[in-house]
Each structure stands twice: as structure tokens, then as C-alpha cells.
Length: 112
Length: 116
Image (tube, each protein chain N blue to C red):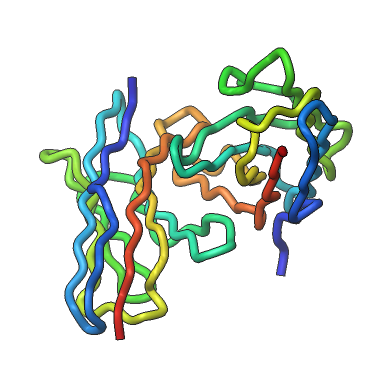
């Protein structure tokens, strides 16, 4: 079945460091791919998405590119801030379904 | 600013008691999801609805959990009887299906349930 695998956390970085959170997927068909972010005490919210191969999603300085050849959707940010501390979830949505498959989440902690 | 609302935000109860959690999806959305989040299991999908009809509740323990949508503005998740292992944060999310891919889900703030 469809699945999402993301890197184990926690990830601890200093402010202004470069961030990569790896995400790979297994899916039949052509899924849409997402990154959601969960700040402490809140629900998840969409960070960015890509709906087809080679699309790049971007928002708030974060980017991820849909790579069909490597079945990956890695999240990157060039310079993290303390306010980016949160849990990040990679997810996929198979075409024709309404049910997301979420990864296990990666906790990011950014130190001042 | 439209958002999903959930009540109560926190609930502490004793084992064996009935618990009802409520969710108001964003007006106009036609899909509603219930998730459970724990440290051990992460985010689990319990059930989801489209146009108020249950499409999949395979993630839900059938003997004690039930989910309904009495109308388009209200979704409920009920646990009867509750057990300590049900302690978790329960999220409701809504979305608009049929947009041709890339369907965003909007999450509520969650109900933190503690069963003693």
C-alpha cells in the first residue's frame, strides 16, 4: 500500500542554519505531495504542496521539489529561525482518493 | 477567517464514562476527517465523511467509538465507554474534495482527552 517515510527526529539546529528534512514515498498512480507543520498546542496546517512531478512547492522560505525518479519530496530552508521550531509532516494523497497518508513527523528545534 | 472549531478543547474524565467531541467544519467543505494523535502512534486516521456519508471508519475501534454527521455543520466523535488508552489529542479536519488534486485539509485545534 501507499506509504510515506520521513527522517527520524528530533532535528536540532542553530538559528540561520540550513535545514533538510528527508521524505520518500511509495504510491501507485500519481499522488499529490504535501508538507504540513504543527506548532505546539495547535493543529496541523499546510506549509506547501506539489501536485505533479518536477513541481516545486514553496512558502515562508521553505521549498520542496516533487522528484518522481527518486520518489522523494525533501523539505529545505536556507536559514531557519527560532519560530520555525515545530513538527513537520510529509503526506501524500493518491489521485481519486480523499485519504491522506501521513509520515510520522519530524520535530525541529531551532536554538537562538 | 474561516476555520475548523472543536469543542471541548480539553476533557478529563474517568474510565467508563462517555465522551463526546464536536467539530464544526468550515462552511462549504464536503469532507470531514477525524484523527487521533499520540506520542507512540503518531497521527492516525479514525474516520472520514464525504457529503455527510461515512466513507471509511476502518481506523476506529468499532466496539466503543462512533462518528456521525447529524448535519453539514456538525461532526461528532463519541467514545463509550472510555478507557485510559484513549487518552490522546483528537483532531477534526475538513476539506473540499473534487478540486482536481492537491486537496488541502484544514485542521481544528484539537481536543486533548485524558481518561483516568
